[in-house]
Each structure stands twice: as structure tokens, then as C-alpha cells.
Image 1 (cartoon, one colour):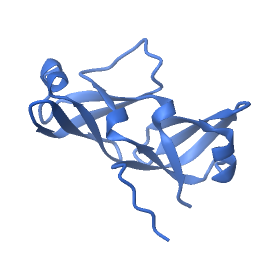
Image 2 (cartoon, helix red, strand yellow; image 1 turned 180 degrees about the vertical axis):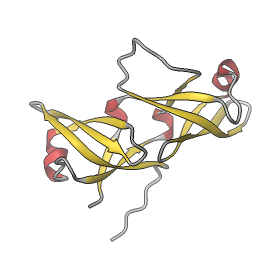
Image 3 (cartoon, one colour; image 1 turned 180 degrees about the horizontal axis):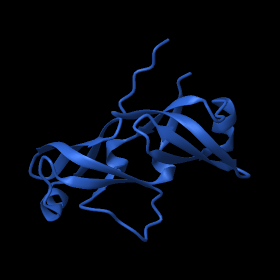
Image 4 (tube, rainbow, N blue to C red; image 1 turned 30 degrees about the horizontal axis):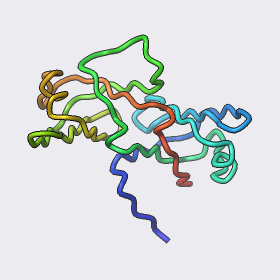
Length: 142
């Protein structure tokens, strides 16, 4: 059975490490584009999905959970910082969908139009995609 999802941000990768806590696990995934992404999910999910190093997965992130910075950032608790380039901006008076090309794929960020203007974003702008580890879901694929 094929599963269709409304989550448009789906990046393929391979589990490289799993750190099990009492209730939550931190899973590191090497994305097909070469960069690493961290996911904080339940220990139970790790066991149900049989997430071990070498397992292929898709990292899933809702567009509303993707933030953008107009350059590199430091001093944040957000674990996932992916460099990218703005590929397209679709905006109305209040909100914007910003498509960002990252190595190995594309992510969409749903942000306010005001944020797009404040950051000076346009097609071709270099950005850093920011995603909290707790907002990265994993789907086992292989």
C-alpha cells in the first residue's frame, strides 16, 4: 500500500547513528545530498521503524516548521542548519512559500511575507534552512 502525505518536504537519506534515551532518541541521517540532519523521535518509533545505521529513510518536515536565515547562523539550539539557494517565492499579502534548493533536494518554507521582505529574499538568494530536531519525522523506506 502506498502512502500519500501532505508533507511536501521529504528528503531521502540513510541513518548513520542512533542515540537512545529513556523515552526519546536522537537519530542522525546522512541525506542523499551529503549533509546530515538530526531527528528527535520517540524510542518506541525507533524500535517500530527498526532504525539502525544503514537503514534508508525519508526525513519529513512540514513547511511551517522550516525557518530561514539570510546567512550562516551560530548560537542557536536548532540542530539542523542546511545551506541552500532560494529557487522560487510565491507570496500573497500575508504569507509566502519559499522553495529552497539544498544539496540533494528541495525544501519549502512557509513564512510571512514580512519575513521575506525583511530578509531581502529573492530568487538566487543564499539562505540557511533551520529546522528543530523535534520537527523532523522519519519514514523508513528500505
